[in-house]
Image (tube, rainbow, N blue to C red):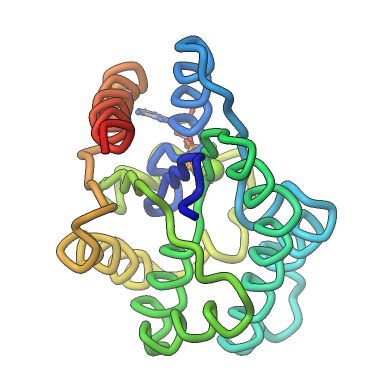
Length: 214
Ligand SMILES: Nc1ncnc2c1ncn2[C@@H]1O[C@H](COP(=O)(O)OP(=O)(O)OP(=O)(O)O)[C@@H](O)[C@H]1O
Ligand SMILES: [Mg+2]
């Protein structure tokens, strides 16, 4: 039986405005009377938040092997699915998730050169094959995104990757749209937060209405 809930993911390069827009979208959906569950990946669960800290810290020790990195992201994701996302969708909630599978496809796939088909197969093998119903990709120039970060805060391990890496990630995101046209929508993110929130809301309302009409 198809899930009665609706699963929305917000994606984009570091600093593109995902967390801001995920929060504003969840608030708007709640105002409209929807049952909303907000999560972040990696994170939200105790295990996921611990894995997140491990993944983002700059420990000074050698960086994780790309496969070790994938395995950690996947561990956090499976836990998030089983513990929070699946039960929320089963209750009919709208789940708004800050990053999800596409982050792995572009950061470890496009960014680090791992095979994207293999990454999807890995998700299937560990029971994490659930795909989003709608993915909003916030598209922003790498330099513009970097300018948004607070210069007083240290960069995390992913943010500290070279510009060329972040460019591959951006292009990787853009390449997802023709590959998954049924769920992926790219939105120009060089707009003030409220205007971008309006775009996110418009697309979500349209897609959700169409889904409920079927
Ligand atoms: N539309 C916007 N225009 C200008 N600045 C923005 C916009 N959206 C968010 N910001 C600011 O840019 C910074 C990054 O925003 P946010 O944390 O939402 O991005 P993110 O994509 O979640 O970043 P990260 O990948 O680091 O988690 C924050 O300081 C935020 O206040
Ligand atoms: Mg964020």
